[in-house]
Length: 450
Ligand SMILES: Cc1cc2nc3c(=O)[nH]c(=O)nc-3n(C[C@H](O)[C@H](O)[C@H](O)COP(=O)(O)OP(=O)(O)OC[C@H]3O[C@@H](n4cnc5c(N)ncnc54)[C@H](O)[C@@H]3O)c2cc1C
Ligand code: SF4
Image (cartoon, rainbow, N blue to C red):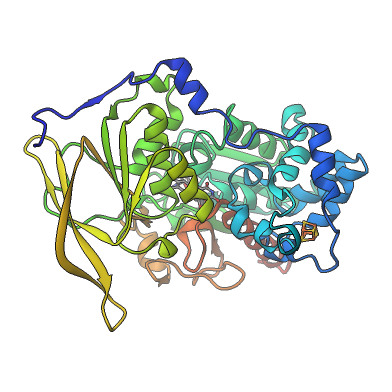
């Protein structure tokens, strides 16, 4: 039987319980733990962990620095390749990147704790605000960076180091992008995203204008006229639709929007939480909204994904984190009907399978789940409408901005990177790398007379 009233209320748990539930997922290592972890490294030649790191951090080198007590040197090695090495130490899916490649896996089925060691090395920099880099002589060149997330900030920092004058134009009131508004709260505690932004900006040479949007207050033509080069890093502002009738029913909620509210909430116990929560999707966002719903006090949380476990975008570690938090994951089913009059109360699903041609098809069998809240977490897309005229002049590839290997768009003096470009992995670390590659390409262009 459907309940007449949805059970969505704040205060399912006390503030103290919520604080406990949202503690640091991976607490930092103590000095002795770090030394023991560092001792496990073989300091491999042509280290596979470094090859697997999208930003190419020299991992054995920074671990060696930790061993010899040179924590600042370790931080310098990390941050010179990845200026968001502090955030990436917290949020990178290391289990499918550097730690998966670590040769220790073959011997002991346990990699060196690279992520935790990276955090150990970089935390002191953000605690003290110590500046590790110097700006080159001013070049007199001006670059516009559009966006405030990892790709934009990485590009801005590298350009500023190279002596260019940068202006960051960001739609949100705060910089950080999804580091500030998207990443699960238990991965980045104590306002780390803003401390990292402040440290990045402390290099100097970066002017920030928040609350201004490309396609709104700004046009691409204006930016190209007023600057020597432009870097676009606007992320993915649009949300994929389920394509069902009643998708606008109250209680059917965009997971990313809810998470943004959660990340900004001063008191999480005041957030409305459903008793029975259904999440549709199979990626990191689906896991994050499911786990955070449980940690806010939802009783019954189920993720439903249309394909098998091995097809999920979320890593095995993330899936286990969800299951360990009491989230049920059901595979091979897709939603076919959202039921409810004034508020969603139930979702009907059809089982799925792969047909002989490799396509997903419904089996005709169905089941239903009662729901007070249904979270849509089936991916995001560029909001082309929001970008105004820019959307008509940029080459599009697979629904995103088309770029070459140097992150150059089809326009002469415009580069792009991060989630908004085609071919990426939609991770913080790959966005940082895009910003770095684009900054280096922009620098070459500006020095060659552009
Ligand atoms: C819920 C969720 C959880 C995630 N968890 C992880 C994780 O644990 N680990 C991980 O590695 N990755 C994770 N990701 C992915 C990661 O956050 C992104 O890949 C990364 O933030 C992309 O960086 P970006 O700079 O391209 O875009 P974003 O971080 O999305 O930043 C885009 C920026 O552009 C600005 N902007 C947008 N439109 C305009 C405009 N028209 N004009 C001006 N400014 C504009 C926005 O204000 C924002 O500052 C997660 C993503 C989501 C949605
Ligand atoms: S692969 Fe593992 S053992 Fe080898 S250098 Fe990297 S972290 Fe050290």
